[in-house]
Image 1 (cartoon, one colour):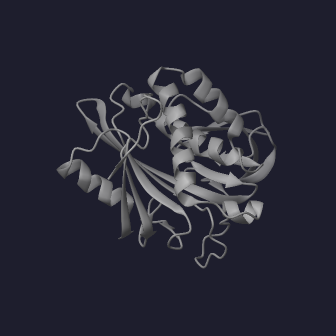
Image 2 (cartoon, rainbow, N blue to C red; image 1 turned 90 degrees about the horizontal axis):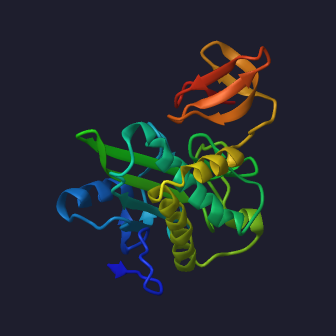
Length: 256
């Protein structure tokens, strides 16, 4: 277990780091740790090799051993009202985007929290909240970030790595440290109720935001629309050609 501090400034994200050589899912491991170890807020569990990484619903996350960053963060955001829990998704998405944006261009967030470089998915985020007595008692944030992997063999449609985008190879330990700082800065904004900044930056980062596209499909079929942003509970708002603004929960609209 590695403990971190920087010039007496309290760092939350990455306050402790536990490295596991091989594991099925870091989110599952973090969930067990919550029951048995009472880890501090910001604790990270990172795997050199994650063999059964989970995405949303039944999706799997492919990651070549020792080439990427696959880890989970423990948070205790009891200060956040339940109906504002999507702010966590925004916060983490922006932290990962900030890290990537210093290294390459065309970084965006495909709603709700996939991170893209151009039209390729470079990172996925899986957030699992535990609710107790109308508060978010704990939150497990799983992050899979493709860093140095060159070849992807799964049937995922559009994976890309930071290395593929830039032609460079990255030190994983240093990258994790810098990524933690970026996520921490955004989490500090959330703690200090700087949600206007988070909301604005998230809206500006949304993939295809403000662009008319026929890339959407919902229960009524394919349609052309323009992403306007998200509402207060995280529903995606898409303007249609008829002037109607549709609001979608997760999985209610598909990006074709």
